[in-house]
Length: 476
Image (cartoon, rainbow, N blue to C red; front, side, top):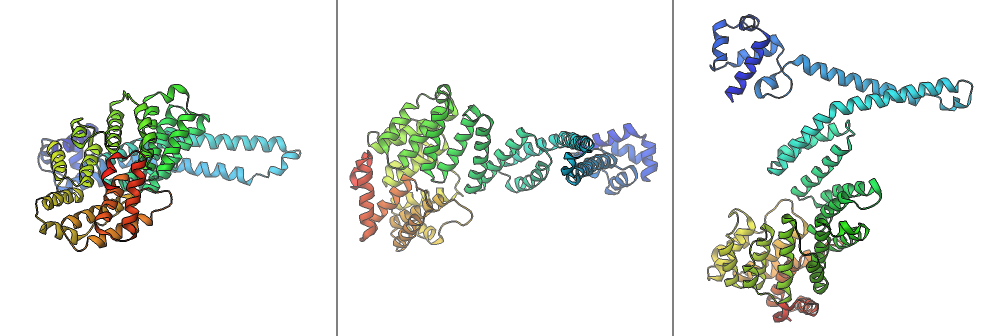
């Protein structure tokens, strides 16, 4: 960025003549002129600009902050002075003998109290005005880092924003900060923190009016989505139902209101109540918002597939519904253990990143369907990837490994099945594994196990078949 650097040199030359800059920095006049025209600038010259002219090095190098250190120091001094005044005002209030209000000097004490509190409020306003723009810029950069998956940079920006947030009580910015913290936690796969932050946002929205408004509806949607993503399905369903009940009729019919109805239906489907689930998902149509329409359409397709009334080929022909639906259709092909179905879906929607663990597993499943098992056996031996992952994701990985080990005729299939079952039984209270993952798990149990787990698998398929899962008829 040489041009940007030279533009900053030009700015300095507007304040001082080139001859003055040359004299103060001990540089020849013609060299300063050459630097201005784009010549290579030595580090010593930049250092002298900082030392002799008081140029801010951050501004000089990358254009950040104010041009002169005196400006930085002045701003810092003003802020520090404000903070000292704030502390003094607070101390004056704390040291007052409030008991004397009942005595003859009560009017003087009340005036002193009023003056101290007025100074306190004035200082809060001034500090808030000065920190607001800084906080807003930090939040903008923080969100951009998250959107670009620059998580280490986001961690640094989060720490900076947390410090500034202590001085800025702008409610809009504080709400934006909490929403960004929730998104950050979600990307970090810290579901508990994401839900905690989103719960704060939802409670704040409720506290404003005591009723559900459009903002409260949106925060409820985000919270329900966070709960559903970690398998807390009953909580997600209850929240969707409660919020729609509390919302005015117009909001219930809004795009977000319809989506909450569809989400409650999807949660019920995962909980095994397919008839009621399908009723709610259908009732939520049509969805005018294109961002939500794809997700609702995906819910409807998956539900119809479970009823057995919509074949895999017919579902595939219904077209694109977003990336999550693509992954769902691949997993639908996996539990059906239909090599043709898997090839069919991957022909329509090519596999994702070959470095991703899931897509590597899918590739090995296809190899096994062709009778090539060596690479799959090596993949099984390598195990599941480490790192932070949600409880549900951990279960998914174990059932996928069981499936692959079984297809690769690897002796470890039984061990992977046992690990998956232990994981399922140890699930935190209120956490439900997805129907897809449990279907793959119990299908493996039917084919591998000869004991109680096989009987449990049969019960799973029978119970779901009786509740409308016609696609499970062959497993009952």
